[in-house]
Length: 408
Ligand SMILES: *Cc1c(COP(=O)(O)O)cnc(C)c1O
Figure 1 (cartoon, rainbow, N blue to C red):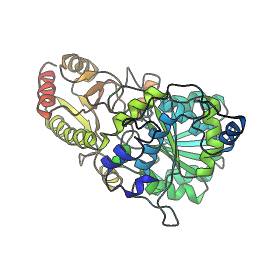
Figure 2 (cartoon, rainbow, N blue to C red):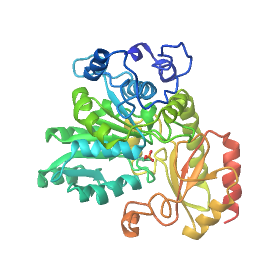
Figure 3 (cartoon, rainbow, N blue to C red):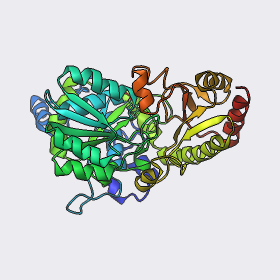
Figure 4 (cartoon, protein in one colour):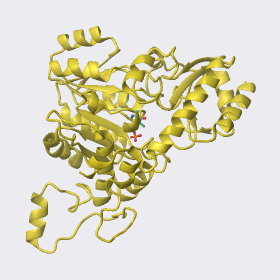
């Protein structure tokens, strides 16, 4: 793979695969086609037999998807080696959404009678998928605080059907972090695989394969795309045979393929991942410090603050602190609503990872499907506000926050 020679992330996202095409197009062509032609039946047979499934039928693969997949593989594998000391090779499968990639992940690794373990602070859709849909398919989910390693070991001892541990770190929206390396070590002693949702950190800040993960998942809708212009998801694995056989089968037959236009938007977005992330991160650090000292703010969740319970683990496994925060305003839900309504620069919307700052209210939006008692236990209180800090000029963000806080 070409990425071996790239020292930096921006060079990698710009040059890994973007201009690999037959017609000398500088940018990646949008192959808006359902099917691909064969010059002869023999050629058709060869393509069906081969490992490259990107020129047969677009549910199976497509040259535009391939460029996005190769770029994400290069990002997650950047600078890493396998057990033999060779550059790490990964297989990525691009999906129509994060949820589609997650369905492939769970269904290709778990079947009726199996058990899945996860940390209790999770993206709302992930938790619903586990507790509502996987449960119907006979797959049990145990949600615990996996930061408690003794509890995790006890859970593994008591449940012999655990096949997969799924981690989301930092978790959206509590920013709780779990120790990927420590959990992978325990899991592998029991032949349990580990998957990591790396959406919030991105491969620029955190590389779970370096810490022992078997699978990495992204909602590519978020920071990887960066502009809020498309929905995409990706599942990566380091067991290439397993990825190309069982995982690929589930991916193709569940039908969660991406489309050429959204893939193109993702490819364009990833080109600026590094410079966007640097700005997102520096703005977030300043926003968190501003909110933390503000008399109207009760509490700020940001892994960069020394008071965050997972500050140390975040520092250990991420290059910088991820650009997502959540906070509570004094006066709870009512004050929070007034604050949200007064914002003029920050945009009221769910989702995260876009170039502009997005603010949302998890209890009534992304985590509406989780019972109140449960979400409060996980730290998602009624008044919690989530903020995905954008790349605006910091002075404008601070001025907007200050004027909105003055109105509550
Ligand atoms: C958005 C998100 C998902 C789901 O991804 P979609 O692209 O919306 O399907 C999963 N995990 C996390 C952490 C997310 O933020």
